[in-house]
Amino acid sequence: MVGGGPAGLSAATWLGRYRRSTLVVDAGHQRNLSADRAHGLLGRDPTTPQEFLAEARAGLEQYSHVALWQGTVTMLRQVDDGLFRAVVDGAEVFAHRVVLATGVRDRVPEIAGFHAHYGTDVHHCPACDGYTARDQVVIILGAGEQLPAFAAELLDWAAVVRIITDTSGRFIDDDQRAVLDGQGIEVVDGAAEALVGAPGALLGVRLAGGELVEGDRVFFSYAHDAANDLAEQLGCQLDHEGRLAVNDFQLTSVDGVYAAGDITAGLQLVPIAIGKGTAAGVACATSLRGYRTESTAPTPAPPTRWFTAG
Image (cartoon, rainbow, N blue to C red):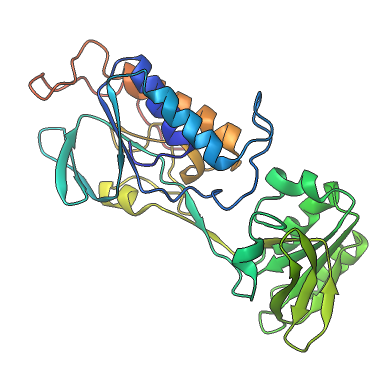
């Protein structure tokens, strides 16, 4: 199991319940660790990302077949006898199955004060944190053709939505500006330079020319890059965004390799990552049905749910 976020820990939980010998390798780079709160989790809304992860890890302690390791997988290959060979912090590890839950990495704005505000009044996910921006003035930072649609998402909650665009980018054309104007979304041309105000008491964004664009919260969207290096080493099929293609059982195009969470296509929400992790864990566990997972056991049967492209 590569990745110890919501998807990885969920998969590990179900592998543990099926009594499959499981090693979870977690580099500690969960995407939402900067957030003050995680929302929308049934029965624990809200909680902090740290509390959620601590509870999930504590829950794994009841499964003696599951081990957690804080570290990094630097190499992952399928070897001739059907096993997978991984290098974990310089040590070799062999496994019959692999579950990838390595997530994505957000590109963040390079402006003064960003890290002090990130997770408090600066956010990357409208669905996750839009409710906290209800009836407020929201500023959008970002780049790319997706930005107008990203800004429009905030109309579900915000009283005012303003996009600040670096005019050197030229990524909002006249047609898009007309649509944004029709939706009541303001477009401010200029380069964001700094966040103004204390964390939790944001006043707005200062532009390079000194102008203050007033706002209560900032949402940003530049790019989020799938952490798919290991998937590429294994030869897994990727989509046009670099996400892993999986079937309904979270099986990738490589037999014996499953994937879950934001590394796969679809909504990027913690509850959905948990569900995908559950599906991956159960499918991975049942593909080993009838076989022991100790190193002296025979090679297990191939996955029972074969991948079909398209």
